[in-house]
Amino acid sequence: MKEVKIIPCLDVKDGRVVKGVKFVNLRDARDPVEAAEAYCRQGADELVFLDIFATVENRKTRLEWVKKVRDVTTIPFAVGGGIASIEDMKALLDLGVDKVSINTAAVRNPELIGRAAREIGKDRLVVAIDGRKNPPDSGLPRLEVVVKSGSESTGIEIVDWAKRVEELGAGEILLTSKDADGTKEGYDLEMTKAVAEAVGIPVTASGGAGKLEHLYEAVVIGKASAVLAASIFHFGEISISQAKKYLKERGIPIKI
Image (cartoon, rainbow, N blue to C red):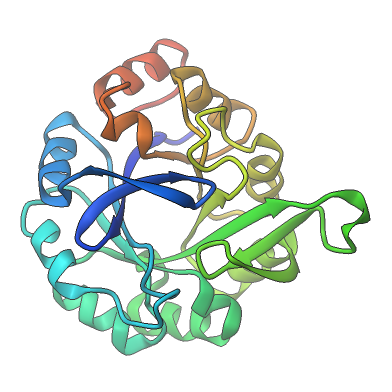
């Protein structure tokens, strides 16, 4: 097993880090620059910045917000939200961003994945997939891809989409369960395992971390290559160092 990454996520709205439950009922968490500095000091392996309302508001990523965070970040830095073209990606990479993450735009225009892999390199391309579980009588896939911050159904089966994303050239997948997001009841292990076992590229588990055991389960049961969390880190419930110590003591390879 390769070293498992611990990744805090900054969901940014109106220039502030926010956190909600199941993508709604957002509450203010902290200043993104302050958060980025803290997580770099604490030993986070990467930092993810998501401009969560960019797509919903039909606008580009706010570059001024990204630049402020980029200027204080000393670890690999990925940005998503509102990225819909190669030009959008290059604008972020020009600011010093290490990876770009596309979601809704990838579903709308899958060819963008292949173009991005060729033009910026697959190691800099993350495809984010938001998923939900549907009841058996819904007429929709049990594990379905949703877009536009989880507000829009696609009818696409999540494992099929993950396989296609890999074939098209994505370097990694950021997988978030809308149902688990912000609940602190644990990652969606069924969804995470289904995707991780179907592809050969790294899969980051996201949505639902509430205690240390959840991080362990995402790796051991869910087969995730990295674990992303927000609430537990933003509100000081668990520190990056605690998470790393806990996983290391249980035999998970961790970068210390």
